Length: 172
Image 1 (cartoon, rainbow, N blue to C red):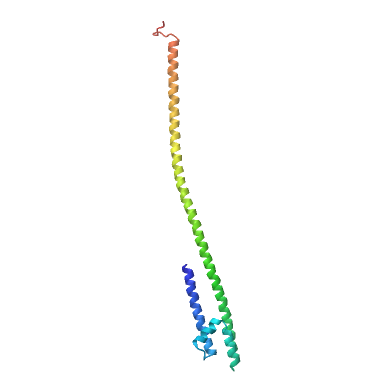
Image 2: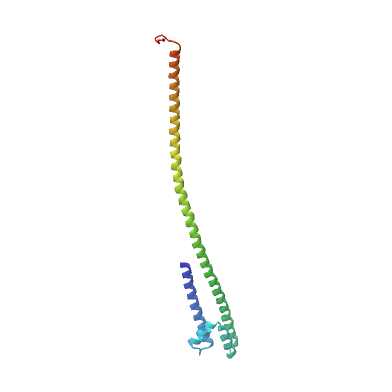
């Protein structure tokens, strides 16, 4: 936005300088012209016509023609520059709109990245909890396995003890 404002201020300054230069040249060609006539000629874009009329009226044709061609050349160059400046203004406005639109997309991507980071942290905590649970389950399985082995050994010893009538075991 600052660039556009700066551009517009430069454009205004250039237009003022242009108007002053053309006004001086018109005063040279037509010294009796009032300020209102000068402004009307500049605004009407027919300043080359004023210079052409002056050339016809003056006896110094060679010098007047040189001034006329210079003025016409400058006038056409200034019109080209003005057209280019208007195109640049439009381009800056289009770019500003694109930047604003891209800003919305970037904000959306940033929000999604933050959401993803939060979900990754939650997923990480779930995985850690699952690892702890798996370790605890594995330990419980081993404990159950060893308890079963111990019970099997105790039952085997008791069966063997009672099955073979060991001394000290009374049978009816």
